[in-house]
Image (tube, rainbow, N blue to C red; front, side):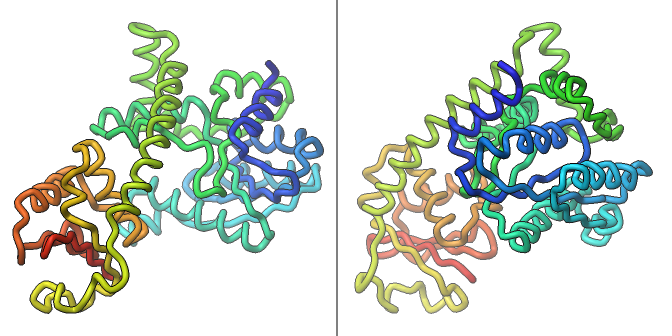
Length: 344
């Protein structure tokens, strides 16, 4: 199968794009993003889409300005609107005392959202590949991630962020770039084994391919697909159980509040303790995470030990004792109810 056919098949299989979509394509100028842009441009008429490009100049390498010009020239030649942002990521990372990887990622996605708003786009396409997904699964596995981490990179996230290259290997992309004479720009820092991902990409996966499994990228992507299917199934179960557990309306009153200590916790979700205790153990942690996400919009900062402590608190059914797994949430059990109190 030709690469563009493969990308088209991926788009249709996962319903990444609908006719009439306007798509922001994140383009660095490297092989992956240039393949993404060129393929989407070639498929533009068949898909019935509009394209705009978002390019970030991180000002980290000497070649950055040359890459910006390269992407700009491609867009001008193909009459594609392009939005360019230039940001000193190293300086910003030092000021915020964060890693350049994290700061760079945050800047990119904030800019993609900004461009989408300006251009009236409803989708944002990034050039994540099958190799990127395999690396992510392996990294999450080494960190001790649960099933959700083994899903790897989602094909589509929040109904907006799409990964049309997610089933394409790096080798296929390199061959496509040569065939189409794209002459992409190569980021030499990808060969520097400073960051964990580079070590996994340049050292660990080649070692596994040579010594254990020459098809490790395909194997990890197959694992990712299996875990995605299983997690989607569990998510439906958790949604239904959550609706059954949640107490709403007049069942909550000020007398339930723990010794008046809940000032500042404006959002509340209350679950039925007895029903929660009847759940299978495999579902309980998922219910807790689902509830916290419903309350705060994130589960960041909630770790395995916190989940275990919350389950233990429910099992002991001790009143007037509470847990604060992170600064924006308080959880306690009282009068047969589990209280999740969130700060806005």
